[in-house]
Length: 193
Image (tube, rainbow, N blue to C red; front, top):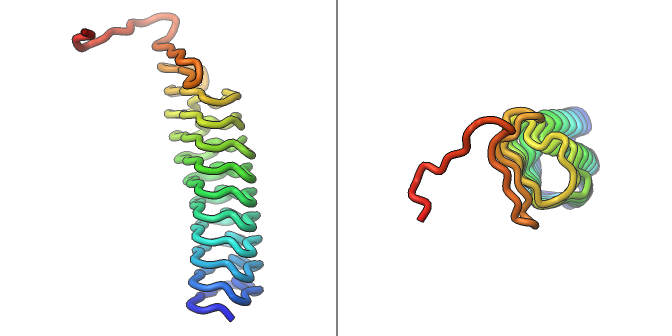
């Protein structure tokens, strides 16, 4: 049987057989884990489907709910990384952050609904509410409220304060970079030599 486990809540860790070092607090938290290890689940149905996953942190109702074997994930917020199944090394902080991700890896989100459309995309970074919300690509960087919210594809850069006001956009694969809007001034404030 497992060792060093703590369960508080209705059916928390109910199917545990050999897992160790798990903490489950909330109804059905880590309910289906049999051999999971070093997991922290706080909230109803947090890490609910984890069977043999490890090194995950799920804080919030339904956080990492459908994660089965994905490891080294952190979902903080209601529905954060909710549909992740086997994706690993993801960090999602915010309500519904990365909630549609299933197998994507190495994604980082800070903000409500950030990268909410990602299912399989990997190596993305989004900071800001709704940042990168519609993308399912790889290697994108979105910074600001609604930055790249309607963007699709991979290798994109958006620094914005709304989905229609981009200060900087770019494409990492082509090297294209756009500064400013259709009006305004772009200046270099140092010696460009």
